[in-house]
Image (tube, rainbow, N blue to C red):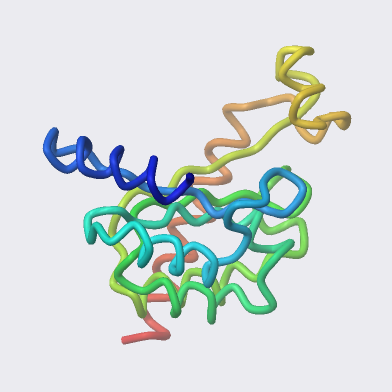
Length: 165
């Protein structure tokens, strides 16, 4: 059913000149695609080259043994990227291998959007916090968080470009 429906959605998206990126999420949130390999298999079954993968470091950290290798496997099928820390707080303060991830993006030649995703119980609406399992207050100042994320991502992109070049 997933392949049939997404194939039809992909046709309509392509006709409307819209991007269709399918997010690879962890096993606790979906049983459809949990790894880049699962995602690539689904894309092959959909059979529309305009459909791409949406990678998210938070989910990849749970499911992939190597973020860099997973990004390498995705290659030119990456359409969109979310970055988030293992605990959803400030980037660089958890366990995610951001250097490996960003080197993978550089090797893939990815130059599309990179969105930062973070949650804190202090600022997320209560129903949404419960739905997402956001029970801890990891930050209170979203402006500081955003500035830190921008600086972190820029630094990681620059370091990856130097390493891969």
